[in-house]
Image (cartoon, rainbow, N blue to C red; front, side, top):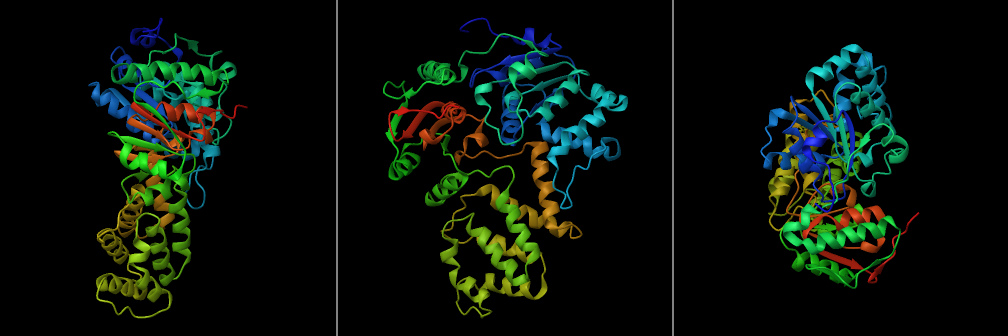
Length: 467
């Protein structure tokens, strides 16, 4: 350790404590090791499906028994309690389309837990609480955590420099909201993620962290081992993703649509991650439910072409036939067209499943938005079993289940925005447009690779746009 740091033994003895931990400095490891010193089942809360996935994997690798903890998102936890006691929660937590009203959710959960019966449920279910990535908590989430801290020992961990979820509402202020009510323990500052793989990179990132805190420019002229800089050009971005990737690799870019376009161009070699809200999915579903059967087929093709390479050109003739009410005369894909005709005549949903299956097996077509494609197939399969529900309602439940279970699959080659990969670790991180990222996004992006780091920018000096 560089200096005195919080130990598992120390953290386990705290009733209310906070630990500030820089990226890659063993935050999840500390949680796991602390559980060994605690009694009973511990509740571990974080913000994203990816975060739940990461924590569970690390706990499993460290040999922590699954019955000693429960990991879920804060939203998932709040939803479980509020929806289980709809009268007590005193808030409407679902819209007419059964989407969650997040502006009410945390107050609703507080209403359940503040009563004696709610407090008892919490106290008999869990013997302690850990909250990861606390810098991303909204004030409403913070109020919920404070209420839980009155019932069970609560330890929170985070890093203000990684607070990039500023779109979700007013975020906690550490000096105003956290440090006055939680005992501040020694920081975690040893860059464990890089000590064995690339200690020079770890030391460089520690220095870079201080520069960002001090609002300084980032100079990329003297880089550590396995760290390279290239001038940002489209051809160089593609070259580095295709030929420079080393092991599990993430390409990081500032806008979702840019990520999708690059993944498409790379013919599915990289998976482009979906945002949590699944806007593309719900936009499709609204049009699907409002359209005629012919329009539904056409919308199905539109959303499928957003998942796959070459699909639009491969099925161009069939799409034209559907649009113009003509019979398809070609030999290729006759089975697909028959299913389309049958669906337009009958509206039989299992035919949609058959159409999706067929599309997925077309030779030369590659899926580059794997999560969206999986959502579509799973959703229509679920609809055949629950025909009394509408598709949007089923989709909401499906996405909320992801939130509770944290079952997001992380692919070996991924392209994404910084906030979707926060908390995840890859062997190689490629920053495709480093100079367009906000200061905190830049820090998160730079700390995703454990061994290799590639930075593309207009110039060797990055001047983040500090407030």
